[in-house]
Image 1: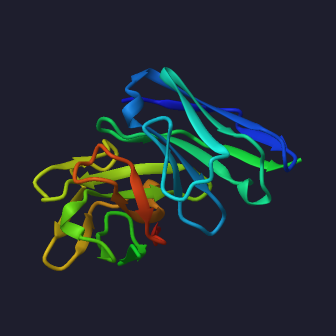
Image 2 (image 1 turned 120 degrees about the vertical axis):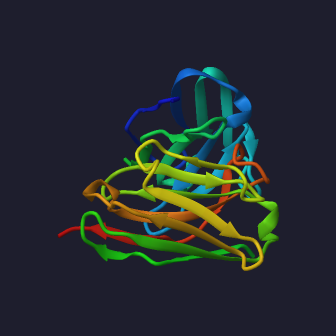
Length: 108
Length: 121
């Protein structure tokens, strides 16, 4: 099983700042099978990034994904007020599919 | 517009059973893999089970293997999860999710609002 670890647990930033979220896998993951979701209270998860770096339909270009092997990053270049949420990385390349524990981005 | 509507949750005693259903619309259901993902109170997302487009390949988390059964009816655009032998740890909101492609090794790009399963005596 591929275990995903996310850091930090909470990231406190101001609107307009840059957010850098980390996801580390317990073993090497094909970049094709690493994604990121955004989750806001009362809403369903929203796919942001798949294939490590490909933006899903309708996702603003301030969101970008990068990484390979065991280390992946989600970057939000300039935080908008709507970006304060919990972000999960997700491995979907083999069974069991796994999610990281999440990084909460909150307002400083 | 993709719509996924779950039903079938409720309060059940330990050891009990439920059948969760997901009604899909707004896309060609038979072309996409589907999954169930759950979220326990105060916890993160946990993948439960997946099924490919045709229904001939299914996958389960170890925590539910042998107790849960995923199935689909492509003629009715429905996804089901039969949950047996329920335990307290199964208490969660269960979400139905559509994958991007026919195979399960693709990301889920649409999610339902979820149905709550509470296991308690």
